Length: 118
Image 1 (cartoon, rainbow, N blue to C red):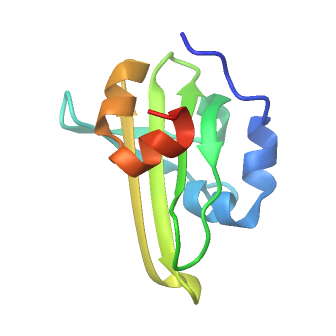
Image 2: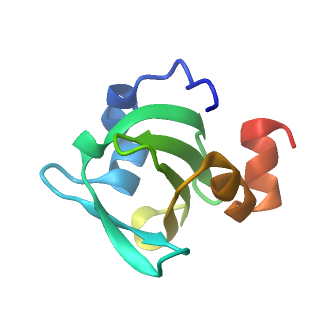
């Protein structure tokens, strides 16, 4: 298993952009599982570690991250928005994978390079 980032999960939820990508208070997200073709319901309490994450910016590079869930799966997120923010035009991809190799393989080349240098 990869070594988690030193960035605490709670810090991710306090950042306004990551909070918008993840959850609004009391809500959950659905993550697509390409293996089973089912949706997994993920709550903030399900995320236990930040494996790797890099902040994006409006009309620029996307927010990207891989997060460990309490059941040992990896949540992979790539998200972008236009210069007006998340309410007008945005694209958020959230998938859940059984192992880190699958999560990395499904990321775009640019996002994988930003997080892992490969």
